[in-house]
Image (cartoon, rainbow over all chains, first blue to last red; front, side):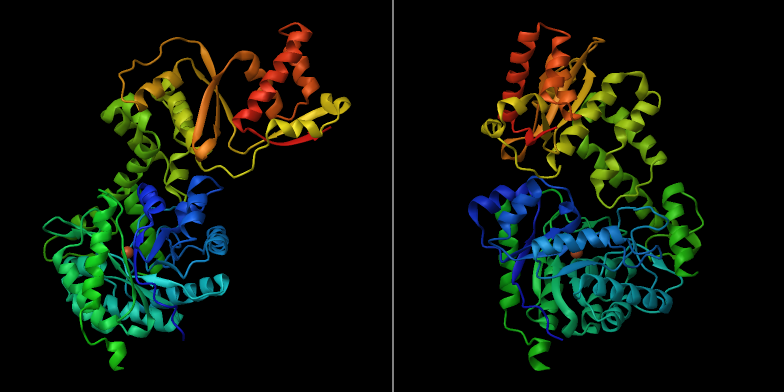
Length: 280
Length: 259
Ligand SMILES: [Fe+2]
């Protein structure tokens, strides 16, 4: 099982930053696109993406695969995703361990799964079918969640690790999502990290969130907070050279601020720590 | 609860604010089950409202926050999203406005929405290289009457209340503008032009007639015929030639063929 080569430290590609990227060729190692934003007939987004990808590796990150849904897989969506991948030649394709709707609806949200054997079987089978269709392994990301289902039979980390093993897919671990969910569900975030085997982890996400006192929400509209940086340091210990990406989706700062955040991630990742991979 | 039943109940509760899902959710130390579920229900409505506000900024301005909020709420209630792309969810808003009171009572609001939608459609319409006027050189003079035109996929013609474009322009440039009140109409040509941005211009009646015919496949001869119903035959021919050159210059023409 050969993991794709690590890409280093990247940023989410957002239209507001196109001028910065095209004019300055900033020191960002790679960019992650939201796949759906480029599933359009034509125009500027696609042609700018063609330009940007001559200078930077691209990863395709989707929000609509709805891999955990009990609705049938959306073949139109998967065909569009495959066609986009043929154009973009991404280093890999990722989506979330969640569902987005049933009975033809799309709620435009990353809705939580119950952590049951039934859900595990269901999602494992669907990932396998998607991977067959796309002809490649995909990476699956843990989401932030705000409810716990009474029917859950296992911890989220057990569920995530089992999905990766049984579906034979990659993992994209979102460190901020682990932090947010750990607060909302009162679990130990480091226990999550320690439960995941590094051989599946190809990518880490970092982002800011909103703290409402009683709960935290994954809003991607703030700088990364100190506690998430600390958890990232632990993630670097666990997962070594996994590619790192900062997501920012609102309250956009000057591009240089995101580049500075990325440098901070580089500094943390470079700290001497014993990577589990190196020991194993 | 089985996965399928859980997802159906969860979704139903988001769409209809029914309460049956609450028993399936555990409270946290800080929030009860209903408050936890409400995070999803609230996010659904505010996310869709945000999609609408993003795609119809001038309509939002014209209606003000409160009335736009009412429109968004009515649309969200009537129209659960079935689309993976936010833009497609917002696409049917003008049609909703034209079919429902109070929005169908004042044409200008739906027309602003139609205009903003057309600009968005032009922005990411399919690519097609446009021809310049030299392409006409390849058409033998005796074939010219039978010449037909293919337009780039972004080209659209809209007939809206007179003053819609002027109001839009003022709003986009943050200038105070009052809503047009005349009952007249204007025809707008919308397309994606240089630097891949949407462009538009108001077309006069004769050009609107010629464009409508040309985009539905009429030949040059037929277009001249239409124009000659309104003008002298000689004027009509030179008018058609001038329109044609303008269409090439704007980058609207993607192909030529002879019938
Ligand atoms: Fe993420």
